[in-house]
Image (cartoon, rainbow, N blue to C red; front, side, top):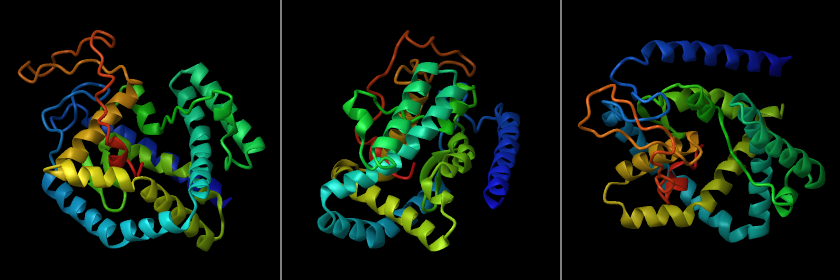
Length: 278
């Protein structure tokens, strides 16, 4: 009963925020292209975002990174891979739902087969049996679904603990988080333990990527922001994003149709580090 009430509350809040976003879509603070194109102000809250970014960086440096480093040294790689597989399996189930909401029947079926196969034969996803049969991940989330439905990405925002996001992805966050296995555990201690395991395991996997960013980025905040926005745009268009309009073009100039000019390499190679919290 409690789970049903929580789900109903999440849906109600999400729908309310969607209406608010729709009402604000004509303002200059939101991105003009319906599915993630350029706008007058991509980062209007940069002062706030940089402060939150600095807080998150300090927390990572003092707590997450040291714990993840020890974890990576102590826990064997096959165990860490099994943990990744378990959470990826839950993501496959949520991805199937989002592909269905986007009207993409084949990927939805593929994700559902992955989820069912790994849940039954892979011990709830600990083993990735489906990949052995050539079934690939799709990883669609509700933020991408909103993008497919025509909602603008909105301004860039950095949240404490969560990290980089946009207005659209923030609205989708409650439902995306509801797909986490931790929320289906009634015991609060075990629930926190599962969440902590996911965070530490993910951070351990990204130790190398974060070190590369530290070495090459003159402005780490800008690097991660741009990588995140490019990656999310690419994901919404399934890697076939239309070319962005010329910055000098008048507001309202339409972008070329998808396929006219795609940017398969637009997602920065270091984007996983910018999306560790997604």
